[in-house]
Picture 1 (tube, rainbow, N blue to C red):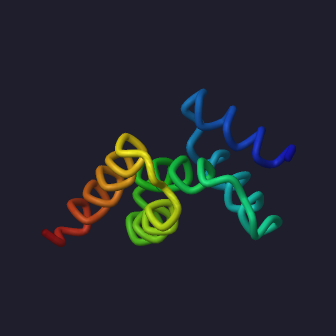
Picture 2: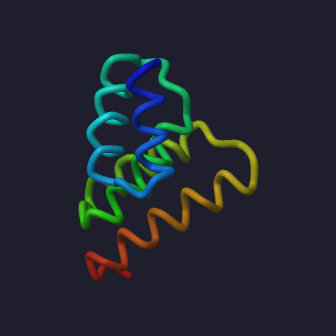
Picture 3: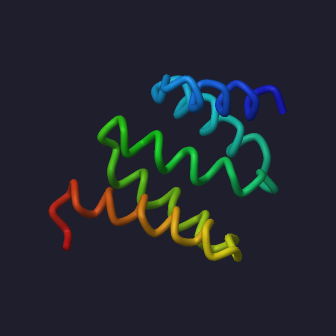
Length: 88
């Protein structure tokens, strides 16, 4: 829970490197990690230029997101990563 909190706070403050670090650790430590971890991880990785890893996180989030807003957010994160890889 502490890793999740640190990652979320880092994300909110725009420290995407720290967010990536803590959210990755939180996701690895808990196989039932909250779905929000994955979208914040995808968006952080996009900001860091880790496009392939961002796509993976966005796809994991899409697998469990049900609300239209949540799905749209994940699709936008995945599209941003594909765009940066010139995969359109």
